[in-house]
Image 1 (tube, one colour):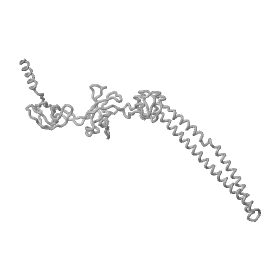
Image 2 (tube, rainbow, N blue to C red; image 1 turned 120 degrees about the horizontal axis):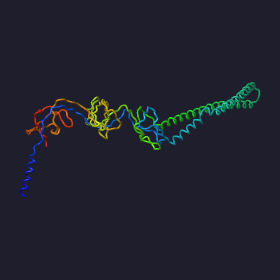
Image 3 (cartoon, one colour; image 1 turned 120 degrees about the vertical axis):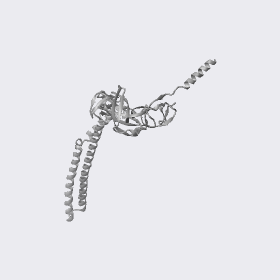
Image 4 (cartoon, one colour; image 1 turned 180 degrees about the vertical axis):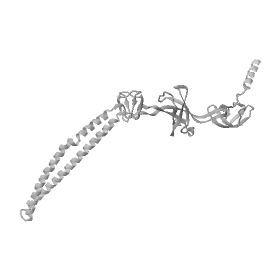
Length: 358
């Protein structure tokens, strides 16, 4: 039993006395970069939405079809809209000015009749007035002729005004009905979904008979000749990103291959959910074939140096202290850093053996 205890103690002492990991600084190049992941999009890629509620009546394109601005993608039917369009057409026909010309002709006939009556009563009135001025005839005869004259004049003027009012009302109803028909016709265009760009149909998300709303994506369309890299950059790194910086890109579709791009656009607003900024880049050296919405990983290159003293980052304490093999802890000045290495600007020579901290 005593021998077993001594053996265990010996093993423990050997373990405690295990030599720490050491290393020598190396001299070589280092590149500082910002890591970002993202999604590949085509230029002008967008999800197509309708602006009305309805049911898909007919899908006019297939996935992979080329489309142009204004090309119809699908049609939507809506019974309420159909009835509204039919009512608008009926109202436009009913209120058309030419269809109501008979009413205007009747009003003109009333004017002509009133005018002739006024002409006769006017002549009789002035004749009786002249006789009355010559003290011929009775006052009753004069007053009757005067009353008939005034009544005829009023009826004549009233007929003219009624004609004007009728014409104005008919013209207003005709104009209003035509505008309502035009509005209904324009609204009918909302039931035809059209492409907003020249490109290719990447995806059709709805089929015939399905219900759609303005919140429902219908299709994905984009320019298949030009692609944009959409990178999500952490808010802590965004201030170091600038247009024109080189981007190194890797894609799962192209194993063990690296492609180059350049930063072309930086978003001015942060995504509050992901705490990141959208940064766009375009390939300067692109793969031979690409597809939208595939994911990638990238490094935005900030700066690069050659022939500098490098140490493993896991040999640093607090990113500023190095432990020498002699046990001395030395404060060093650190420059560029990548995921594995750090540049030492001062405080260490390439021949100094260093120890990995516990």
